[in-house]
Image 1 (cartoon, rainbow, N blue to C red):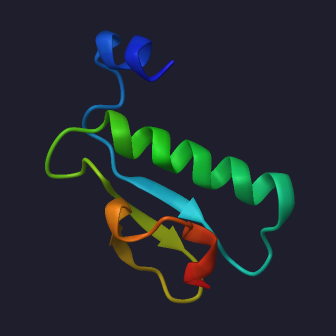
Image 2: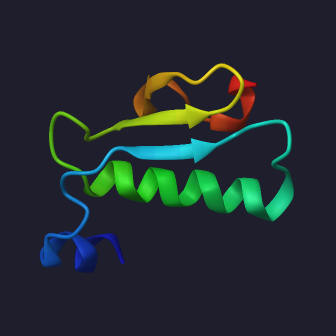
Amino acid sequence: MVDDLGKKGKLKNCLAICDVSDKMAGAPLEVSVAVGLLISELSEEPWKGKLITFSEKPRLISVEEYKNLVVLY
């Protein structure tokens, strides 16, 4: 899936925003993180490997620094 989207050139200039707020849990939280990681992977520099967390304290993070985005909050 990532390769197919990458070949189409879609989402290459995007910065992902993942909702990891307290109101998110279960499947919705997992989908938010999954889509954020997908967009981050497909993006080109300067956004590749980065995303913004949507929460009370939003942060710009490097995906490589976190193995589990849920532990941020």
